[in-house]
Length: 232
Image (cartoon, rainbow, N blue to C red; front, top):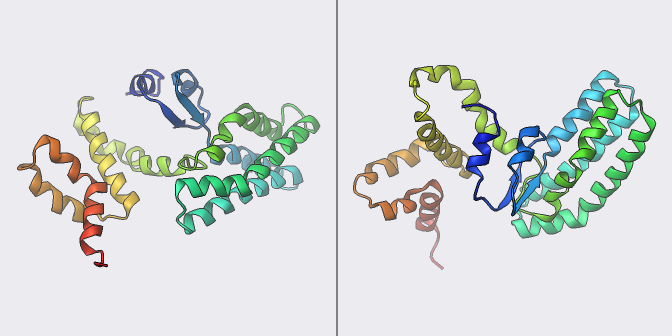
């Protein structure tokens, strides 16, 4: 019901693994034992983009944007090649790790040269403060370079919130979240939500609780792929 730390803290209480966020300070206090905090390169880049907009002639800001852009080229190629998490991690180690190390050295040099209160100094401070988080994607192939996919999945919620004021009860939140999670998964898998719902909803009434797991978007998608796969 709010952006306070209580919600994420309760949700992640027993979680172990990678948590990827922007640098919003409330997230710092919800990180517990067994969690690895990954950062977002898109948010880091945005700070330098803002500095570049203020002073388009500033070569340093433009240079940093171009360096970050090279990291995204590696990511785009890995996605185009449909690399596995293991292969993507190896690709990042081969091509991105040195870029990231060189970029950190460059940011330290830039920060020493610019005025402390400038937009470029603030951009450097932001990136350097969360640098350990920004490096996490290099060692974890399943982690994206930024939070854009997650934020794009949540964007319809923010845009449609006013249309849902008639819900009237915060207890409806988890149900809406479950429905939207299903729809977001369909989009991620390239499934048309209507096709999935038409195929699955009629079966729910006669499906046991233990077998519902076979009706998730991922399970349904895999079953459909197996059904049309050529027999060798």
